[in-house]
Structure formats: C-alpha cells, structure tokens
Image (cartoon, rainbow, N blue to C red):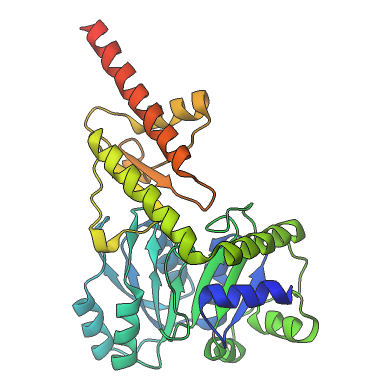
Length: 334
C-alpha cells in the first residue's frame, strides 16, 4: 500500500500531504471533509456553477455553516473579482470549489483562486473537489497551498468505482484534530495513524479495487501522464470537430475546457435520450446525458484513459448513421 500512496503523492503533486484511501464514493469524501474541518456557524465561501458544486454547498449548509455563495450560470466559470471582494471583506474558515464541474463541463481555474487566497486570506482552508480533473490537469497541491483534494477509482483511473482518495495537508489534519464534530469512519486522525504505524487503512478497504488502482497508477507512470494527456487531447479535438459538423454545439469557452469530458448541446429536434439509448443498445457505445433539464438536449462524452481514437471514430460513425436514419424516417412520414 505504501507504494500506491507514494504514486498518489506524485499524482497530486505533493511531498508533504497524506493521501488517505477510503472505501466510499466521491460524495463520501465531501462528507469526510465537512465533518473533519467545518463546524456549526463556521463561515464558508462556496463557488457554485453546476450540480456537483451545489451539492458541496448544501452539505456545508446542513452542517450549520454560514455559507456565502458565489453562483454562476451553468456553462460558465467564476469571476475572480467576485472572489477577491468576498475574501477581502470576510474571514472565512474555508473556500470550497469544484475544479471540474462535470454537470456542465466547465474547468474552474484553481490556480487563480490559489493566488487570491495567498494574497487576501492565507488562513482560509482551500478545499478542492478535484475528482474529474486530477488525471487531466496539473493540480500542484503544494504549490497552490491546497488543503484538501480528491480522486476516485472510477474517474481517471479507469477501474471499478468504490474506492476514493482524500489528500489532506498537514494543516487540514491538525485542524481535524481540533474539530469537535462526531466522526468515526471518516476520522482523519485514524487514517493518519494507521498509515504511519501499519501502512494500512483503519477499516477494511475494497482490496480488489485497491489492487486495480495500483495497477492503473503503474501503467500511468510507465506511459507518463504527459503522453496520456496528449492522446486525450487528440481524441477531444477530433470529437469536438466531428460533432460540430453534425450540428452539435460546444458552448464551453476554450480556456475552461478539459480533456476528459466533451459536453455538447444537440441540434434542435434531436432527442439525446433516444440517441444515447440506441447507440448503447445496438452498438454497446455509451454516452452520458445532460443533467436535469438538459437530459434530453445535451450529451456528455467521457474520454477515459482507455478510450482510443478508433473508439472515437466508431462513435462518430454510429452517431452519423443514427442521424441519417432519423432524416430518412422523417421524409417517409412527410
């Protein structure tokens, strides 16, 4: 397990923080963060620009925190001037942000947030939900003075879901020891002491997934993260170009895009539920739908480490075939 933890440190780009391996989903990591670091009446700044960042905000509110929310329209990122104003005029226990908001496809600039925190609020805990961006972009945990960051087995590692990693700074672990909330399964101090004493977890881990994650980290180390990102960029650009030709629209500004997820709005009249289900049933090709109200008008196409350019070409071909068949059927009806 120590070898896995050391490779995770390299992934998070930290020398001093501790990656804690927990058997839970990413939502479990959010709750672990809340119960270890925040208490009732703590003042928190939350950046919300989608469903998952909103979930994080709600969890802090349910803890009883006084949450100031900077909320932005789906498909957009935060305004750094709003953040600076809030930090200058308030004393916050923590700032929470979702690095890559997978409900919309927007990548938030955590490096800009780090600079603002260093300048205006160096004592504020910097909490980053990094689950869907950790493989695709440089986190720079130490350089950015991040206190909490996440990873999960099913996102980026391309293995089964069920195992998650919470990377905590020394400052965060010490704060958790002062925190008076009830906590047992998610108690940071247990994970720290068990790792230091036994190079293990305090509770039974999902061993098979842990072994798969270790294997995935070895593969990434051998192939290099740079090469993995290069391949993803080629696939992303190809899909973006081809879906644009078919009338789909990528509304995310270029600087806020990520290599791991292409989000496109469908042309008028195209029901994405039918499109996705047809490709899934007939060709074993799966895409995720938009969230909530955009479920039948938007596609979210994940680009994992195991996806190849041939896979992407097959997706484009079958999508074209579906659209052509749809046009033929409409002409017959006329």
